[in-house]
Structure formats: C-alpha cells, structure tokens
Length: 260
Image (cartoon, rainbow, N blue to C red; front, side, top):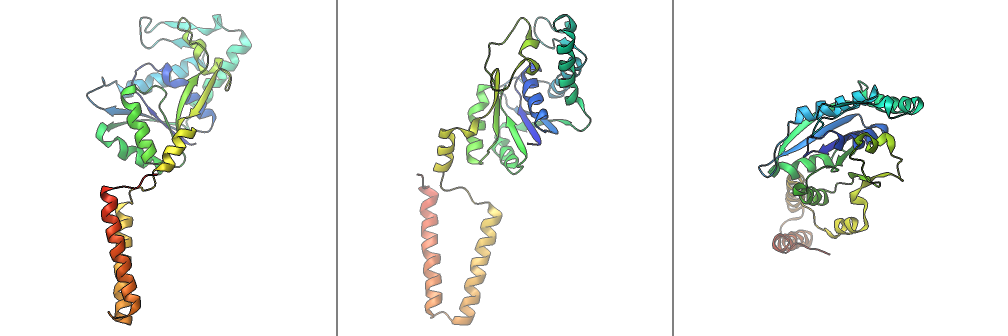
C-alpha cells in the first residue's frame, strides 16, 4: 500500500488522523482527501481540512493538542500535563514520522455521477487503498456497490474497539491505541459475504477497446481464411456457425445477464 484515498464528509481532522498515521507507518507515501460533489451533503472546505489534519499532526509532534471544531475550537492543550516525559517523547516521535517531505498531501473533488468511473480508475492502481472510516451513510452504499463492480480489493475502515473519550479526545488518537486490542484497520471487502457476492458476478463488462480489437481480429481471421479456403469449405462454415452462435448469445446476455 503506497497511496491512501480518504473519502471525507466532515471537517473534524481527528476523524482522519488515526487512519493516516496507521497507513503512513505501513508505507503510504501519498494521502488524497476525496470529496463527492453533491447537493445532498453540505460541502466542506477541502483544502482547509487538509491543512488542519497536517497542523494537527504537527502540533502533536511538539506535544500540543488543538481543537479545530466544536465548542472548544482553537483551544490548546499542553500534553506535558497529561503524559509522563517518556510517554510524551514516544508520542512526539510517532507523529513526527508523518511529517517527512516524502509524503504527498492532495485533495480531489469528484462529481457524484463520476463516482464509479473514479473508483474504476483507482482499481487499476494496485498499490492504492480506499478509506471510508468517516464517510457519510449517504455515500457508503454507492462506494460499496462501485467497489464490488470494479473489483476493488482494498477498502478500509478504522474500527475503534474501545469507548471514545470525548472529554479528552487526544486519548482516542492512535498513539493511545494498540492494534488488535484497541483498534483494527479492517479491509471491508475481505469478508466472506462480500467475496461470495463478488464471485457471483460471472459476467463483467468488457472494456470497449478490447471488444473492438477482438472483433477486428475475428473479422480479419475470417476474411483471411475465406481467401485461402473459399466460401464453401467446411472450415469457413464452422467459423460462420460459431459467429452466428456468439451473436445470438450476446443478444440474450444483454437482456438476461447470467448470475450464479
């Protein structure tokens, strides 16, 4: 995993920090915040969110927690009053690793009707993963459907296994959490039901370019064979029969797609 694509629907940077830190520690070098442009959801300031996430990481790396939203917005907490010296040193080191120049931070806005096309493009980037930890329920069904159809194999959510601490939100950040005990970074498409559903789609749409190339090759092969063997040869009759059968099958599959 080298690229992390995060669907965003809230402007609270804490919601994304755990996934980002976890993935950077696993080798991610590119983080992209994706917003779906749609009138069903209030649009957030995407560039501001990216800046706030980065600043939250930077503040933590020097032992400060800052509120960016809510009733305590802009309030700052000095974490040296919350942690012992050795714990604070480990906390700073953890977040400092996420601030290297080798990590790219980007934003991307896509139209709702282009969602499947965008996810299809991501499916071709084998080193990429999609994160839906904080995405609104309005879009989660669409993203799952597109992931199923486009054969996405890395669709993740950060699953918190402990009760969140709303009074001290820094206590629910990844430096306090042990993987496997306090959180899991779960691949949602590795479940048995999702895999079975994926296998049940026996017919997938053939890309237009491939269809054109195969059709041209078939026609060219038929013409060459006709030139050498003549129209009345058994070989040409077999080719003609195969073409007719495939045409009939294609016609029925358009209206009656095969399912398991």
